[in-house]
Image (cartoon, rainbow, N blue to C red):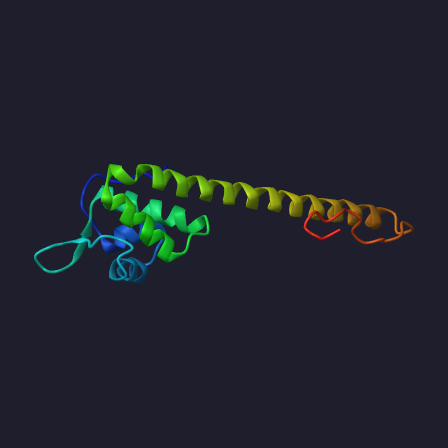
Length: 143
C-alpha cells in the first residue's frame, strides 16, 4: 500500500502519489470521474488523504481494463451510498474474473516464450538440432 500523508496535498503532490499527471487529475475532475478538489483561498487545488486514496482506487479500476465511462458509473454508485453495495460488488467480481482470465492468458504466453528460449539455448549449444519453430498447442486457435 502507498503511504499517504494525513494532511492537505497540492495537485503536484497528489499527482506524484497517484502516478497521474497534474493535467490528468484536472481532466478526471472536469469529466466528473473525480469529485472536485477542495480549493485554497488563492484558488489552488488541494487534496485530502481520502481523496488521494479514491484517486488511487480509480487508477486500479482503470488498470483492470475499465473504461472511463465505466469508472464514472462506478463512482456514481459509490456516491449513492450503501444501497448500491451489491451492484458495486458485482462489478468488482466481473473485473476480478477479467483479470484472472488475463493472467491465465499471459501465463500461456509466458510458457510459449520459455519454451522458445529453452529451444534457442539448445540450438546455441548444439547447432545440429533442427529449428522446428514452436510446437506448443495454441489454446486460443480454433481446432
